[in-house]
Image 1 (spheres, rainbow, N blue to C red):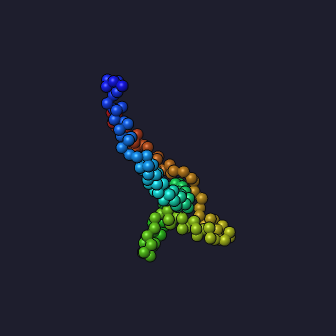
Image 2 (cartoon, rainbow, N blue to C red; image 1 turned 180 degrees about the vertical axis):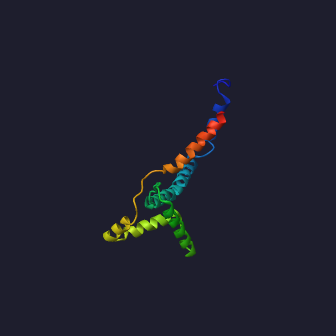
Image 3 (spheres, rainbow, N blue to C red; image 1 turned 90 degrees about the vertical axis):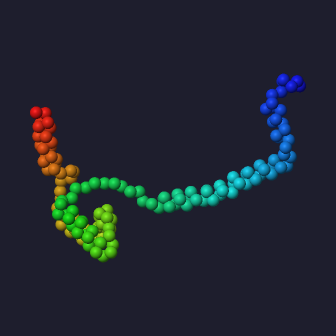
Length: 145
């Protein structure tokens, strides 16, 4: 070969390969494989444990409801009573406790409790919307003049 036909980078590549003996290259490859395999086993166990913990966690559902003002004050009173018992609760926890209490009742007791609660119209109350709508219209009308 002539010196002009061989590029400098091509001439260096065989020299790099000849620095290590084939046995040393095999050991290096084995070490790399062992290093890759060793952490893989604990990582595989950790996601399995995480999946078990996630599987046990119940799915949460967000919902809204309409409740009369006097019954809403009862919720606040019950929250204060729970705080006095050194057991502060959130509204959702209080409602969930009530559901568990209802679920534990007999059919006759549950029927009696349901009859004691008056039925209300579902949905958002329109009284608030009707009061704010004319005020908004008058403000808009005043701005136009």
